Length: 149
Image 1 (tube, helix red, strand yellow):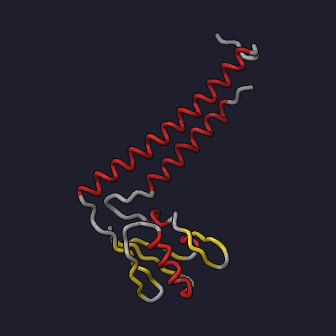
Image 2: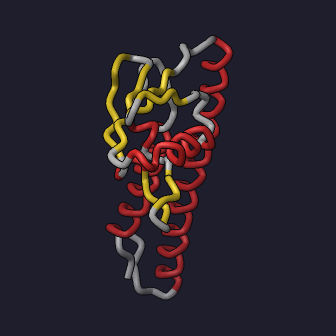
Image 3: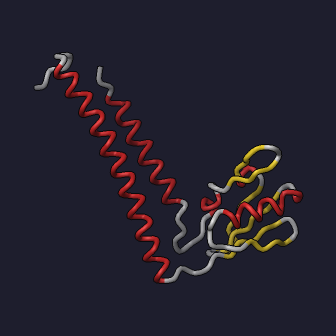
C-alpha cells in the first residue's frame, strides 16, 4: 500500500541535505559550521574536527580553533589546508586562527553559480522522488488496489 509518510520523509531528507550544503557556503559572516565537514585522520580513524576542538568566532571574518590535544596540531593544520576553504591557518600555541578574506564581487558571482548548481541538483532529487511515488500510485491503480476518485 502507498505510504505518504515515506514520500514526505524522503523529500524532507533531501531538503535537509540542501540546507546543510548551504551552511558550508561562506557569505558575509564566517560561521563555525563551515568547519563541520573537515575530517582529521588521527588516532587510527577519521574524526570530525568538531570532536577534537572548540571552534569560536573571534569576529565576523576570523575563527579560532582551540585544539584539545596539541600533538594533533600539524595534522589539523594539514586537514584545514586540504579542505580548500581558501584560508591559511595561523598557529598560536594550541589555537589555530583562520582569517577569512572579504568577499569580492567576483567571488560573490561564483557563489551564485555554486548555489544555483546545488539548488538544481536538489530540485532534480525532489522531482525524482515525486516521480517514483507517482509511478507507485499508477501501479496501484492498474492493479486495482487503489481507486482513483
